Amino acid sequence: MSKVEYGSFAVTSTGGDTPVLNDSSLNVEKVILFIPTSSSETSVGFHDSTANFTGSTAYSEENTLKSLTHWRNIGGTKTKVFECTVTNMDVGEFSINTTTLSGTTVLHFVAFGS
Image 1 (cartoon, rainbow, N blue to C red):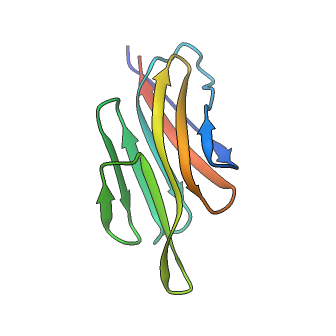
Image 2 (cartoon, one colour):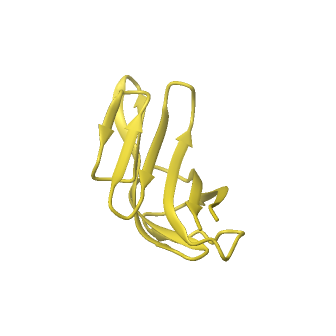
């Protein structure tokens, strides 16, 4: 049977984070990540153990090397403010490695699995 859980957590530093799901029996197989800062600067990412994909509404670009990259227009300059990769998916949790962080960021997720 397919399961899904939606949630969010604050990323406060670069490096690893492992959000623990409310459903401790959900075997995570796919994760969608997103940062909705405004209607013009939303970023969405995807990871499923074999593929990464991230896209930005602000700059209409895509990247298949990272799970989520978020850009902002700061003073007229395109600025990368957040970037991470999903590094592990397990039962009841998944892990990310954040490599770019300009300040505390609330990362929203949807975890899919069985």
